[in-house]
Image 1 (cartoon, helix red, strand yellow):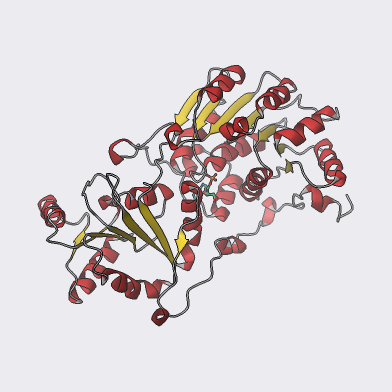
Image 2 (tube, helix red, strand yellow):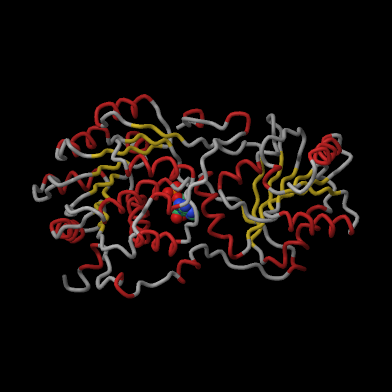
Length: 433
Ligand code: AMP
């Protein structure tokens, strides 16, 4: 897959704008809103804003979105809502994913988001022993409402003749381009031949090459289409991360800024207050720095920009308003003093350096609370960002444990309390079912 395949790229460094929806605007059932709350999802991502209303309205859908954009929840949320509010729930939804890892990942999100709903899901994937096959078959016969399957194993189960998809209402193909790259085209068509024609079909793909269009035209009916535009960070950016505690940030920033090899620097902080305090502190320490934020008059902002472009000001510190639209050549360092809240913002911010084929460095500070944000950034850019060691004088850094917050998830209570937890097929054996 070449990067040129990505179906839409931000033009001129600008993002698409969306009406600022919140999850309540989708009229989700309260139990699903509780699940979102427990997962720590505060607002829908752009792909969720676009795809959820269309799926709720029962349209077939082609969605072009990469891992890291929140694409899984974009189809899982409306489907869970529809299953929860539907009369016919038996084997309602089939999600097909290219790999066992992705199938398990989707299942985990389904488990998290459906925590307060009585909806059962089962991942069905190859590998394992004959027992696993028998257990998956039994679990399917017992009637999971949502099945997440890899194509090969699903065909084997279909060939065994015992799974009925007659009541199926939703089919999702996730990472469809990868499935075709892996040679699953005819398997997918075979699986679909077992499914009722009267269903909603949703296809997610990171790219839209012609073979995906061909598949879509065969299996989707009058589909709507949504695209989420993400450009990959330029190759010339040396991306680095420091895991650290909040109170170590300022000292680290000062030591980085003291390195004279960096001639032109942008520092991003998340709030105006942070920008103002840091500007004052660093100026006091003798750094040539200017703060850039929305409290400044336009004329003042322009003056600051002129000073920065002409290299009179070495460092500019600002909020995200700095990351869009400004086109300054020759910035050699971007520092994310606070981890960007959205992975897309990370790409915008670090895109201020290494413009026009030049090279640059992007350093991101990640405190222990922001490690999940780092995980999302890494899944969006498709690779791990190189971890740096804190200077010894700053003391020990936190461990990397991005899942830590989920351990404090709210537990169900009162009428929503489930008296069963979904089990994976391999767990069914141990509890004797
Ligand atoms: P995906 O693109 O589906 O692989 O999702 C990437 C990551 O984003 C996963 O860790 C999700 O849990 C997380 N995520 C998805 N939607 C949201 C949201 N609305 N707010 C915060 N995190 C989200």
